Length: 430
Image 1 (cartoon, rainbow, N blue to C red):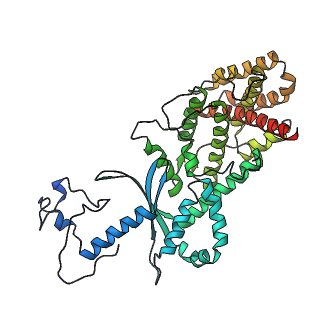
Image 2: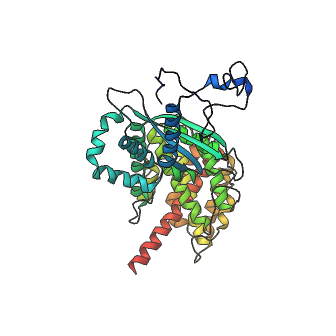
Image 3: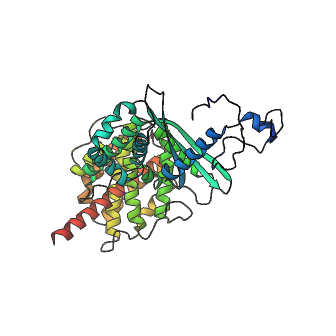
């Protein structure tokens, strides 16, 4: 809102009772001028007063925000507040420009909006071209809030997100989707691996009933939207809890295992890997390593392509292969049952985290199980590659206990997903 330039004397007011959001606190007298509180001539009336026109503009502005620029993300209501870094000559926040700013934010909220946004640009190309120059100067604020009766609590204000960065996020989501399609296939579903800010919420466990838990997800969104560094350890710990929710069917979180927790785990961890790739594209993810050289071509092409595209380190690849073989053993243990059947071999994985000593023991147990179920011949090369990558690092292990479990279960999930794909293809061909 521009400062009031009216010079004639007229009635002023500091009464904001009709405002759905208050600009300042009136409960503490110490915040008022000369400690006069709600005095008609001093106190808060002197701190902050409005002329009739300004009062009406603010009231209308709030109604507009609430009616046209309100949205919801991860169970949190927020306002989209467009603005300009500076106002070039004759540039205005017109209604059409505000709609375009809103469309940009909507494009990264959920998969439907991401795809429709691209189609909308193609249909309304002239409009978007006209505002292209202004987009370099434009930003939006996201004000997350909680409202109950007369109280208005600001949860988080994410300031000045450049419109260009929002376009970058939209493009990064689409590129990550393309990566998922390439290494996993999509069975003709264009949205299968398309992540969004709302999808990220389904990968970050938050305890139900804890009013402070929302801060975790809003801080994560702030890192993405403000280009702030994000610790890999936070995500790995979140994925560890995510795995426990599905494997142990733990209640009390925003994520529910559902009727098919085993399948839920498979798709959640594959999405988790794609989320890491999305954050790598944004260059905000802290920590992690990469392969020093391509893995041996003794493995199936699908595995080789996946671990290389995901940028796994040698330690991560070794665990992925170990998890892949655990998936094969699990399939033998429940032979003939559906994909959601519980597999005893998964009890060997400690969902609280695993250190290098536990990994070494697990690799020996997997070798014995491959023999026991007479499938060692099918996975002898896979086991050999796993050992060649594991053994040089096991004495100076650099992965955290949470990361170790994440990569183990990523390999397991990849195996289960491949089995599902093969079963679907077989049904289609019958």
